[in-house]
Amino acid sequence: HLTGSTNRPVPQRAVFDDIGGLDGPLQQIAELVVWPAKYPELFERLGIRTARGIILHGPPGNGKTLLARSVARLLGASFFAVNGPEVLSKFYGESEQRLRKVFEDAAREQPSVIFLDELDSLAPSRDNVSGDLEVRLVSQLLTLMDGLTDRGQVVVIGATNRPSAIDPALRRPGRFDREVEIGPPDHDGRHAILLVHTREIPLADDVDLMAIAEMTVGYVGADLASLCQEAAMASARRTLDDHRRQAAVGDALPVAAVSVCQADFVEGLRHVQPSAFREQRQVV
Ligand code: ATP
Image (cartoon, rainbow, N blue to C red):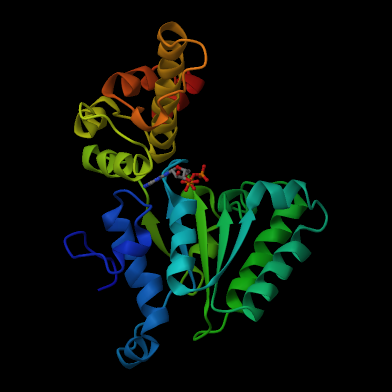
């Protein structure tokens, strides 16, 4: 049973401690990628076919990159990141060589994790593209995936917010045959993410992160990270304002007494729009 479940503890949570929420996906990724790498004999004995490639899918800003990096860290693996659109434009004409080189480097430096961000642009469904380059890239990627050896230690993690736009041949067994959904955080997820991003921020006693989680429906991880920064900025503004108004010339700023209060978060909310709604507005 490889689909993972949310009600078991996630191993090595400490390594993932800069990730808020996502317990279900973390468990799935542990089973698909981390366990086979750490306990190869067990997987071999049980005849479990390990995944060469997995796809993380979900809207931007939910932590797909963060997750891939953390997996590499957990495995003590080298991390190779490839951005789909960048390979297509920056290395135009050399995109295939570029991709080959990444796989070669990763094989040399195994254990390694190759992260293919925006996989849909690197490997779009060949039925829907007219460009010769895209078609060649898809076949190159298929060849590279097929070239990964069964018990090798190269894991390929693709990220996309449009899994259906990826060429179906890439999603067959032995290639990217497992998919993990990284959805937007719910209330508890947002609370967990706020806890991560306020770890380094001195919070006043009135700060209620549960209440902020309630106020931030539609905010993804990246939005919540910005919100915490904006709240800290609001505190900086307020502190400097007060100081200018109240202190005598030459008085030192009472930095050690400064903290971020609930009103600073409310102020921060005015500066950070939730991605979910931002995207909707673009559509309208
Ligand atoms: P994109 O598709 O735009 O690359 P992504 O899903 O890969 O998005 P990340 O780049 O991993 O998202 O997230 C951006 C930033 O948002 C992270 O560096 C982190 O600061 C914050 N973040 C996102 N999700 C989480 C999370 N679950 N826990 C903590 N921080 C998060």
